Length: 124
Image (cartoon, rainbow, N blue to C red):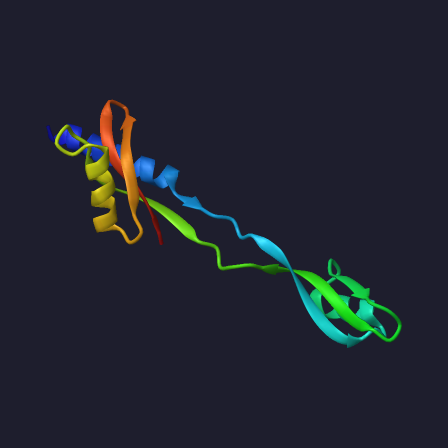
């Protein structure tokens, strides 16, 4: 029995390690008004890098610099587990256990190598 518990613990650990997911940083375009149109492109690139794009709405208009900026701090999603899924603790029970154990946790039963494990995803 001890060997089965150790093997199961090792298996669950491997699943958790390989299933961890980190969301990629998403970028969006931002605009900054830089004042007059004089040297608009040079000022834009100097301030926000060579990939920035400048536009001017006329000779006496306003310089607008468009550049890539982060829209939000990326959310990290982690994976954990609670216990085995059983007839007395099916899918809904697993989801409830994940919500109790982890902040914003959700879970489900996963069949892996003959075991029904309760695996949770949560913000970390």
